[in-house]
Length: 188
Image (tube, rainbow, N blue to C red; front, side, top):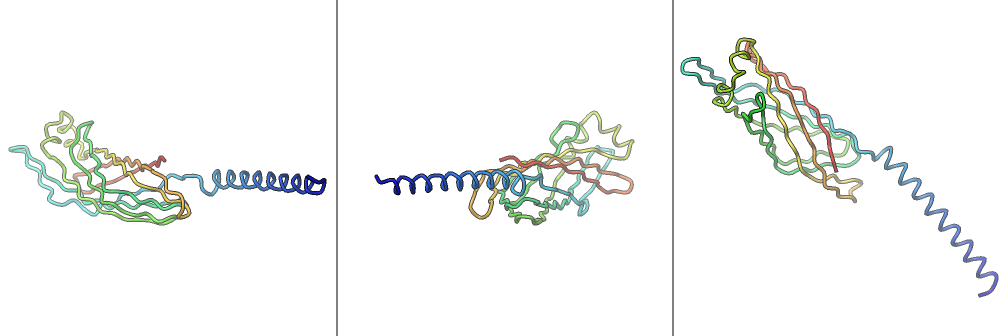
């Protein structure tokens, strides 16, 4: 090789190395700032209580909670999830299933979904804490839902992800209404 071609190779190699280093710095900076995975904000709203019936003699309870979940996605990637079923607990005992239909939450957008939660009254009434909660006029429930799906970043990267949602539900008897407080997390 001649001197000029060796010099040209050195310059080309140096420029390539500089471009690669700059690309690595840009990608690292973007992944730690703009594309950093943020926790979705999930709120639950009561759309009402349907079929609420309670009898002391014989003891029976029937209630259906109509719940609207609003998922606010602050990420730059969309999230598409499949059908899922969560559980509602009353003092550690499963008292209901929460069906969640598949959906698509756009990047930096919101999505609403509705679920009907049928409470298994026999499980609630047979719980030793039932009489104390009845006297207090409120029942505290906890729900847990896992939404498996895919996170799509820049319409190129498809990442498997799971959204974990935990809600504390307070059902008040006088007047009959519900209060929800939800927390969520997403893991890739």
